[in-house]
Amino acid sequence: MEYSKRMNNLPTQFFAVLAGKTAAALAQGRDIINLGQGNPDQPTPPHIVKALQEAVADPATHKYSPFRGVKAIRQAAADFYMREYGVKIDPDLEVAILPGTKTGLVELPLALLDEGDAILLPDPGYPDYLSGAPLAGVSVELMKLEEKNAYLPDYEALSPAVVEQAKLMYLNYPNNPTGATADEAFFEETVRFAKENDIAVVHDFAYGAFGFDGVKPPSFLQTEGAKEVGIEMYTFSKTYNMAGWRVGFAVGNAKIIEALNLIQDHLFAGQFTALQLAAAEALTAGQQCVTDLAALYERRRNVLVREANRIGWQVTAPKGSFFAWLPVPEGFTSITFADHLMENADISVAAGSGFGETGEGFVRVGLLVDEDRIVEAITRIEKLNLF
Ligand SMILES: Cc1ncc(COP(=O)(O)O)c(C=O)c1O
Image (cartoon, rainbow, N blue to C red; front, top):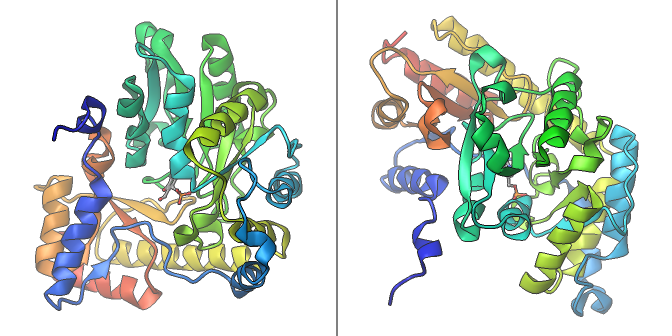
């Protein structure tokens, strides 16, 4: 049987390949330090688990759920945005509940673009941004994120033809994979650029909870006019260690939100009510668990930067997210360096080129192991005498 052209055009799942390599090494009984993936290592906070347990025991949650989410989670998302960012959100018109934000990111090209249109994506960027375009039959145009521009795209560098074709753009700060953050000035420039060129903006705020050195990452929607051009995606996966629960939401521009809700009316029949109620609890309960988690990642970041610098590996401290973006030593590509670490130091890291061509020359390290494992990883690398 032949698969459809759409399926054949799907990119290779970068993380699936990486996870396979790591799993094979672990299966050989090797003591692999896994710095390659973005799967939070801490458990979901107990009060959220308890909320799910209570909700699941109530038969009222066992029926079909409303297609567009129960009111409690839509209201909780609106209240969260007011409390955390001072942004007013209409819970009925400006919230879409998603089975993980990855799903929303794949749905949007299908919902908003036609053949001949293009989506602007960051390079390097979260690999799953590439999944929606071939399904929708639209082209991808890349915006380079370079160190010299603090890993922000340079809109001026895009050709007029590309800007003309582009109808949708994804941004992500704090950034996966570089750990860079964006400021208000950049978001203001983005709103201007989007308005001038009629481009819908999706800001993926997956790592919004993790800003370091006392700086809280701004929401895109705090910028004047942002809601006229775009939406923000917010996942529970990272903020509340709920990656396996598959729940997130989008907020912002009512027309884009309606497009997401409409496509989901056709793809899904709502999400489990009990899960939505527990997710609402995550947003509305005290946020000490989030403060503690951000502090944990900042401590791990500090240990990584200190240890790397100790062995002569010049690294820039990430300003947010739970990733560090480290330069590859002379004589290696990002892939040969990642392979070298796996073969000779039992360390898994993600090769930068897996996030796009501009990621060449770097590897991404996840801060998702204990501090002593980070120290151990750098000690193993020190023995390779590369720096
Ligand atoms: C930048 C970014 N966006 C979105 C996601 C997907 O999150 P979710 O679990 O909500 O699908 C991830 C997960 O790693 C991510 O790194």
